[in-house]
Length: 255
Image (cartoon, rainbow, N blue to C red):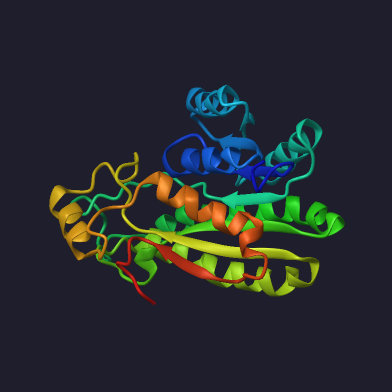
C-alpha cells in the first residue's frame, strides 16, 4: 500500500513536464490525482490515462487558476469525484521560456511582465483559499509550491520570473505560520534547470553545460526529480516539516 493511499491530490499545471511527473509520483503512492490544465487538454488526459493504466485514480480538469470562480468549481468537482483535497501542489506557470539569448534585460522588462508572472501567485492564493477550509475541517493537509533556484543563484537574470517566484517565499511562510495549528504543512521546492521541458527548451547548450558542470552531481534535473521531492513533502515522512524552502538541483545551490 502506498504512503498516500486514500488521499486526494490536486496538481495545478499538471499536464506537462514537471507537473505531469508530480502527478504520476503522487499517484504511484496511492493518491487520487486531479490533473489541472489550462490549454493542454489532450496532454492532461494522457497523464490521467497513464495513471489509470497503472490501476491509479486520476482525472483531468481544465481551469484557469487565476479565475477564482473556476478554481472553486474545480475543487467542488474534485470533492464530488474523489473527496476533499488532502494535497495541493502549486505548480502552474504562466507562459515563460528560459531563453538566455532572447530574454528581456532590465532596461526592457516592464511592470506588465512582472504582473503576468505574478499570476502564478494569484492562482496559488485562490487554490489555497479553496482547499484550506476542508483541510482544517479534517484536521490536516499538505501544500507544496514549486519555486526556482534562480531565487538564490540568478545565473541568468530572468527578472520577472525570478521576482514572482521569490514572492512565494513570503506567501508560503505566512501560510505555514497560520495553518500550523491545524496540522497543515506548507513547503516549497526550488528546482534547477530541468532537462527538458517546454519552458527550458530554448536554453542554449552553453548554459546547459555550464549549469551541469557546476552542479556537484554533474547533471541537470529531470521532471521526475521534482516529482520525488514533492512526494517527500506530501507524505507522512515530513509530518514535522513546514515553512521550508529546499532546492532540488543536484547541489548547485547550497543555502
